[in-house]
View 1 (cartoon, rainbow, N blue to C red):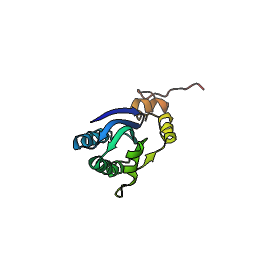
View 2 (cartoon, rainbow, N blue to C red; view 1 turned 90 degrees about the vertical axis):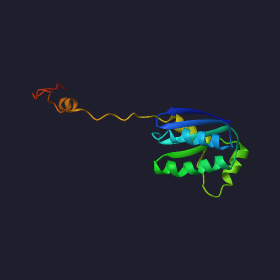
View 3 (cartoon, one colour; view 1 turned 120 degrees about the horizontal axis):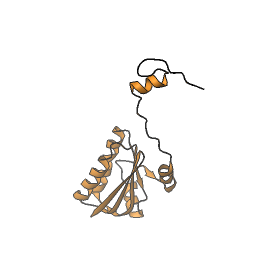
View 4 (cartoon, rainbow, N blue to C red; view 1 turned 60 degrees about the horizontal axis):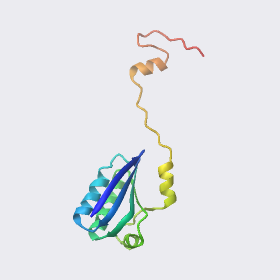
Length: 141
């Protein structure tokens, strides 16, 4: 059984996993959780509480790598227990990006900037010194 909790922090998504990723149902749940985060720039899979990962889970992680790359998303695995990390490291097909504690802390604490909407026509005219009626505004300095 796999429990998943998703937390968005700016343009980063933290997906906390708890349980095992050994069956197809669990692997599908993980895939669905990750692929639902297409707007993220970085996805961190927190594997702290994953007790085991099987072939289906490993295949799912392998398939998510190119999915993320195609969308310009960094997919990082974090804090796997030694048996899970050993399984990931001995995988010949894909090299996983395993994030350090320091890296994840830096990602979480990094300042986030909200993109600003482009000004509408009225806002552009005001900033150019012309009001909506077309007369010139005098700005006092």
